[in-house]
Length: 257
Image (tube, rainbow, N blue to C red):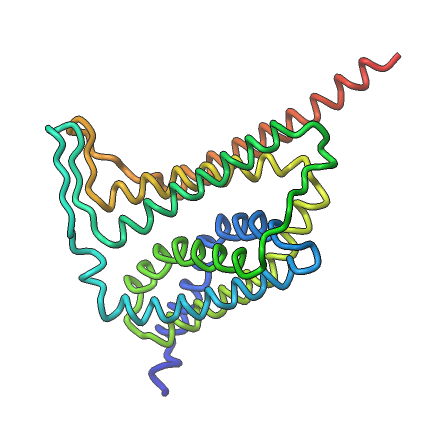
């Protein structure tokens, strides 16, 4: 027990908790947008329960990865299409690729829905069953968690240190989820920005999954989008949205008689 609370383990716990928080930002955005599909009076409940279940499954996944990590990384399907497309898929790459495809599909569908509506005030659609929304939140949370769990395994071999970091990260997500969702609800103008950020998240997952599968197109390996590049693109999107909003307001003021 004394070694569990050693200075090295406490420092690793702090680093892993920070890692969970940084890698959970894109996950929080997805949870906030997905929870809006539930009935209005159940949305906060859906976010909290979805994250709580996902945290429990993250710990189970962590335990499984510690025992079966070689199976997740070992290729089981090779593809060589006349040298045009070459790849070696493993379980990890398949999960990340499917997650990226689903997120891009979701973001694109919501953007198209926004463009098709006649009255922004009538944007709300028929609510989905609570269990279905929670299931999607849990499933996508697990997709997002693969990187953080594998990073945790690389930094520590103490299960309870990694599990504690996951629990603290989950508690932070539950605390922040309602605030992010509330901000988007009060500022509907940022919904489009949020969906395009989600779209970029999907692209990041696709590049990461393709890299994990050692995919090459015309003998050119696909490199994963780094977190630095991801946050730079998000910063440019946010800055563009702010400048455009202020410029639009000035044009409206100039147009007034």
